[in-house]
Amino acid sequence: MDSVYKVIELVGSSTESWEKAAAKAVETASQTLRDVRVAEVVELDMLLDGGKIIAYRAKVKVSFKYEG
Image (cartoon, rainbow, N blue to C red):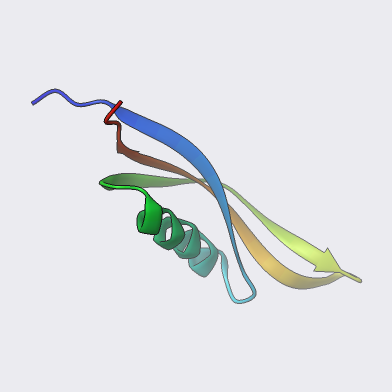
């Protein structure tokens, strides 16, 4: 069956790790989007304060089935 998927970019954050930041983005997206299929981490960065890491951030592309 032919399908169309829409891709959006999200940024998740965590005080613990990049993995948890990415997981948070996908988890949150899955609460409001139907049929989330693929997530791709495209960028990782950190939020700093006084030279100390206060948060890990993951930019994630999430695709879900488009039902126009």
